[in-house]
Image (cartoon, rainbow, N blue to C red):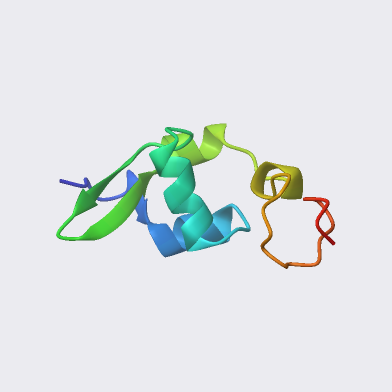
Length: 77
């Protein structure tokens, strides 16, 4: 279980990293961030946030993504 002050909800983690909750979930899945799920809600370890910089668009958009975001990073626009 989460100890008070050592973790933050996923929404707060996304704000701190200037990204989306979906991206934070992907980072958790890839073990780029540490966290745990309690009663269906994800919490991110604060220490792992301090080690992780804000993701660059090139970290998110991959060649051939087809996301239609207009960033031009994936080469499909």
